Length: 374
Image (cartoon, rainbow, N blue to C red):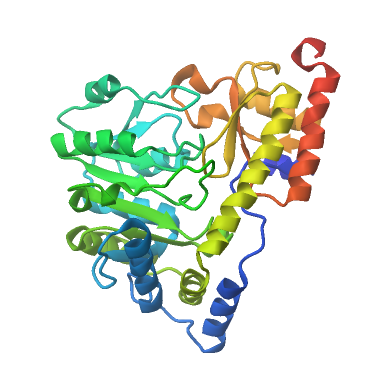
């Protein structure tokens, strides 16, 4: 969709690329590292300053006693962290449970490592799941479960009660939990981000995966990480070394500077800024007749496009791009079966002027009479 959008000179609300400015401490930290000659390989599991900064962050925010020397693996993006975790901890044929709608890279990473994704449906608007469905999905081959909170693409922020259900389930069936928390600072409406690793007896089986791409608007820097017990971190780090060698050294230093120098006020302001962007986009989608499922976190919104012509969500997304010049992602990227046929995903990690122009274009759908006039 990004390629199709570029071809027509449209507004790209498809790919999750942050257009906002990078915080000054992050830029200056990277520049300082380059100027000082920190341009060779780092230790395979990351530079000391970044590992220590991450360990302190998780101590303060999640109450986890993280050892910077043994529990942190810095990787080439959060996708690199998941890939190396799967290589290290799963065997070909192992089954891993995913909740729909799911992030497509989670599915593709499992397939690339020869694991087998097993899908659990959830119900809008809160994307709740059934424990009965979860129990039915377990087999002798089930090895892990993936939790994404806040979620891409739904924006769901998992509650403590939901996480406790998954925690109890994982302990009962002796499963790993891979938890993708890269949007942890994008939480709205007075909700709370909770790390499942901090729940009772969950540290030993949880691999917390995240990164700095979204928080600092540095998606191209590829700075991710895994936080987990030492026995898993060693294996994950070995695979990260084999596949990537290390994440970019001076960029790690910039990310470390951002974690250390930016206080809670920065993250509170960030969440407030994105909440406003959410409101602008969701209001216009409603005006256009593309009813949004209001996200609780992250920076995506799923919208109902059943009013648009097309046999599936790809045709509907292409119709939308053709008529308005606004690109979205077809919902079938996030669901197995027909559930995503009438859904598309929009990204609102854009400057206000870009979102406002996209909204102006989307609202022309209402004026043109939608599907019936087509």
